[in-house]
Length: 123
Image (cartoon, rainbow, N blue to C red; front, side):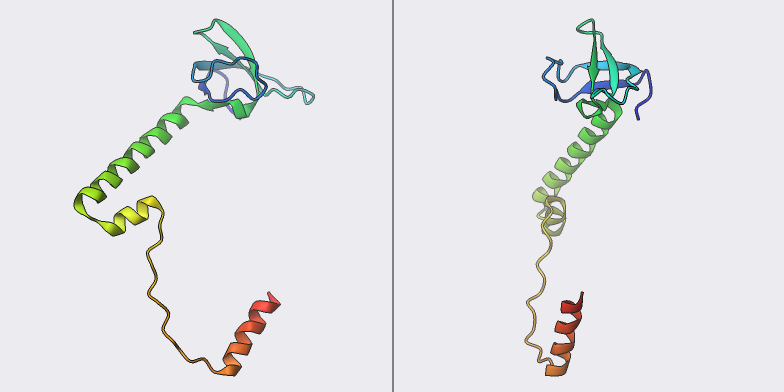
């Protein structure tokens, strides 16, 4: 639950109330009624208006700034990995898992194979 007076950014308009997406605002109240679909009352100084909004439509400014900083850092590391030819760092950042060595043709005893199958089938 967000605290009163916190600076927020409008990120969505779930109920199509013509919310100014991307604008800053402040939480000025909470809607405590269980019958209401809205969670907060916010004030948007740029529009000089109050809006009732659900929690999914707003986000703390701090959270957005932190996420943007992490994305800039990630992009800079990708650029560095490309410039230096560091394939391992690049794959780690992009999310590819390093290729595993091809499995060797190991001969497994029939009893061991049946035991493994039975264990997996039991789970």
